[in-house]
Structure formats: structure tokens, C-alpha cells
Length: 306
Image (cartoon, rainbow, N blue to C red; front, side, top):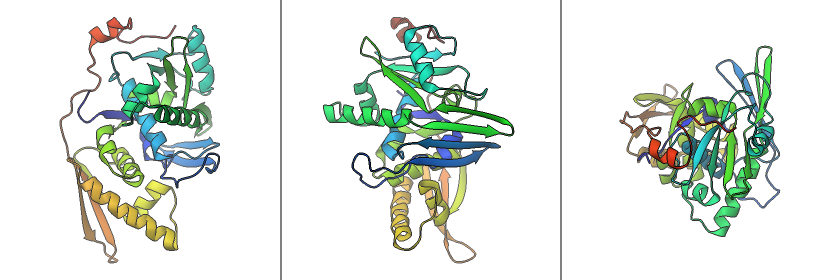
């Protein structure tokens, strides 16, 4: 695998506060998901019965990493099309419930295992970890994305998944996520960097900044802007002070990573401005997976699920 585990991700999804640091809650206590944003003239609206936390984002990134042809020996990926004729393909396509030209085209499906997903997220493969991955998959599959661009509208589930008869776990992602994997328009997120960060706040901040700052670039932010990036809205009083403290700790952790620089300068109004730079670093191409490995699994270079 690539040392930094680079994931090609949809910029609109990566920049949005779709995944947020959540307080520790019991089952059934999460608020509903309702996130709106705009990107490139497209309105995006995610809805679901449960808010999504940072572990769910880690799982989605791990799935996207594997779909970028960096999967393990007993894993495979394939193209999923509306015309797919197999029972598995039909079930996965129906699960996406895709409509509209932007979301109803060919997408990708990963064949993996619960244990492999646990390992990709940095967990062990015990029963508790596998139950957590199953619960996160269920929350992800319940999320619907609505798109609008002018008069054009469309919708799709974020993912669909099922357990096949042979025990493999099949996970399909929506068309927007698949297009990023295939290089249409994407940002790069390092999963290795993410897993090295100590808190959900630092992981969330790293993901949002990775979607905004290309390698070799830098941007400047006020603390209030970083707060909106991570939590979606600005708080007040003690809640905001608590968030700012977490963000300062997250910035310190981010600056400790090899390719990130964080410095502080005073703004014109005396408030701190954070200068964040993402240095360039040559990467091995995560798509350079062995063709022999694919042939061993009986899969062509661009396989289709028929």
C-alpha cells in the first residue's frame, strides 16, 4: 500500500460538515442528519435519521481507498451499472436508489470483509470492532444525497451494501464518490495522517483542510472559520470556548505531521490568523496495483459486475 494511504475523495463531500465530532451518546440518541452546502454551482443536501460522526468518515475513506485499487489480496472491485444483471448487482443498484443524470451513471462496488474494513480503520478484528463497523455501515446507507443545479435535480444514497452468499461484504458508493476515485474531480486525503491524529476534532479538521488545500498551497483562517468547517455552525459562550480549545489542540497535532505547517499571525483587528500550508511530497500512485493480483481473483483491469 502507499505509505501515506492517499484517498481520492469528492471535494464537495470532503469540504462539507457532513461528518462532525459528536458527544458520546447511547444508541438512538443522535440527532437527525440535515446538512446543506454548495459546491461549483451545485446545491447538495444530505439527510438521514442519524448524524454522522468521525468514525463513519474514517470508514467511508477506507472504502474509497480500497476502491482506488489499493485493496488487499482477498478483495476486489468492479463497475456497477444500471444494466447489471446479477442478483448482487441488482440489489446493490436498487439500494443506491439513484435518480437524475448526475447520480444515476455507472459507479463502483468493493468486495471485502468486515475484518478488512476494521483493519483499514485502524481497529482490531474482534467482535466488538466488527459490530461497530456494521453499525456504521447501516448509518451510512441511510443517508440520502439530494443534488440541484438549475432545473436539474437528482438523489442517491451515499452507499449501499450487503453480505453475499460466500460471506464477502459488497459495498457500492454513489456516482459522485465513484467519479472522484476515477479522477474526474477529486481532492486527496491521507488516511495514514488521519489515523495518526489523536482526536476526532483533529481528524475532522485534517479532512476539511485536505479538501481545501492542495499540496504546495497554503490558506489562512480565523478560528471562527475553522469552527464552521468542523461543526457546521458557530456556537457561543462556553460551547465556543470549548471548541476553540479543541481546535487549538487539533492545529498543534496537525502541525506535527510531516507535510503540514501551522503558524499564527495577528490579523488587522488583533485576532489570530492561522496560516496553514500543505507541503508537496511525491507520492506513489495508489492505483498501481498488480494486474497479476487482479487476474488471480478473476477480475479484469476494468471489471464490470454483470
